[in-house]
Amino acid sequence: MANIRAGLPAGTDIELWFQDEARIGQKNKITRRWAKRGTRPRAPHDQRTKWAYIFGAICPAKGKGAGLVMPWCNTHAMEAHLAEISAMIDPGAHGVVIVDQAGWHMSPNLTVPNNITLLPLPPRAPELNPVENVWQFIRDNWLSNRIFKSYDEIVALCCAAWNNLIDRPWKIMSIGMRDWAHRC
Image 1 (tube, rainbow, N blue to C red):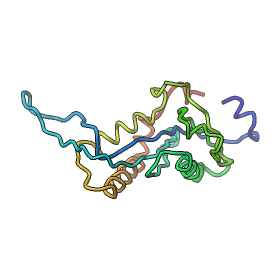
Image 2: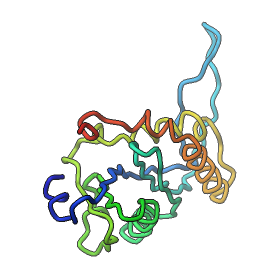
Image 3: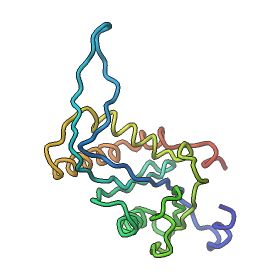
């Protein structure tokens, strides 16, 4: 972060963003359910294999996020997501987007907007990325324990789930704040 700050004009505000992708689809996860003691609640589980990817990023300090639902997880999808994040960064600010080391995040073919710097997490450390907890929250509240009728329904419900999260900036803050990243 010190190297990034040193390369920016003095007084430039830095927004810290966390980014990740989640696959949502017909082979959906089964989550915990409330049930009367001694009973076994039923939950639907689809065996078909259509899915979409939610590309999501949050800025916990400001309670905002940027997301896209895409059919593939590749460099082109990542570029579109970075453009979306770039548009959400406050004017005059610079975004530091913390990503895992997936191939499409670190590709030399990836075009990164001028107001963004990518900062990779250490390898094999998903617990450092609060977006992993965002996926758990979204699945638990809006996407699990259901059968999707079609690909279009998967996309529509993913968009609705992401928009539900964005409508709750306090939830983004509570899920995403990390002392190691946000202390002064």
